[in-house]
Amino acid sequence: MTPKRKQKLFMFLGLVSLTAIAVGLTLYALRSNINLFFSPVQIVAGDAPFERQLRAGGMVREGSVSRNPDSLDVEFTVTDYVEDVRVHYSGILPDLFREGQGVVVVGQLQQDGWIKADQVLARHDENYMPPEVADALEAAGYSPADYQAKAAEVGKRIEARDAEGASQY
Image (cartoon, rainbow, N blue to C red):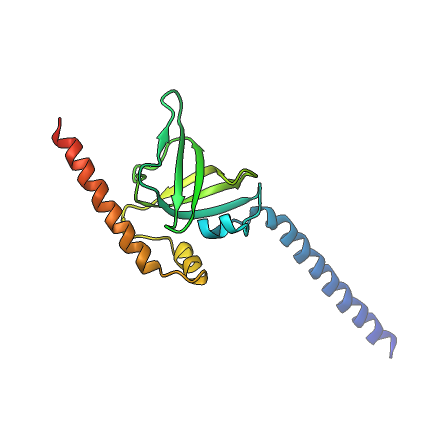
């Protein structure tokens, strides 16, 4: 091998190794910012990491919302109609948040099995199921269509209850 070829080979190997180091450091820095999605079935099964940022989604279980009158603290249950996960959130909830609606919470799973949410995202359609939840249910062997029908039934029950409460005023 000629000295010129050796020099080009070392230069090429140096660039490849620098690129590998840069990619490795970038991935290492980004790993703490990755929010993996888990359904309640996966969380209860123990697939979700503890005290790491994650996203969990499902429907807000009917009758599970509990608000603290002295603060902005709210507790509610997220369900995929197979398993339930309790969520604690302190802050202003989205206007579209209510029982029987689809939500995605961003937060940390605690050792006791509940989620300390930093952010709550809500959708307005009772037929909506976050795509990640639908995919997770299919992977677990459940049909998302069954749960959407159940969510629609819960939504109708809640609307009837709200209409009944409004007629009393």
